[in-house]
Image (cartoon, rainbow, N blue to C red):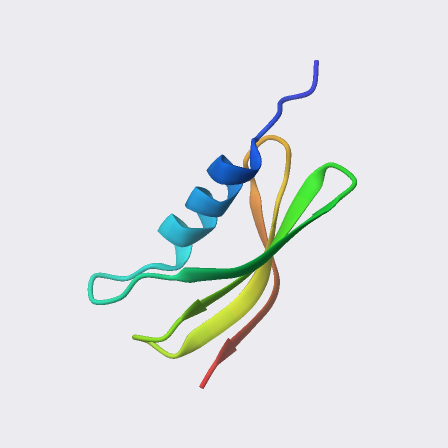
Length: 68
C-alpha cells in the first residue's frame, strides 16, 4: 500500500524544514510530478531559496538550494 501526502501537508513539511527562528519560508510554486510534489520556496530572512521534492511518504529531497 502506498502512502499519500496531500499537497497541503507537503508544503507544510517544506515550510517547517526551511523556516528558522527569525524567518519563515514561503512557498513560491508547487508542481506534482508522478508521485512527488516539487516545491519552490524562499526564506527572505536568511536569504535562502530552493526547490525540494516531497515524496508520497513525506520524505524531503533537496533538488536545488541557494544562499545569497
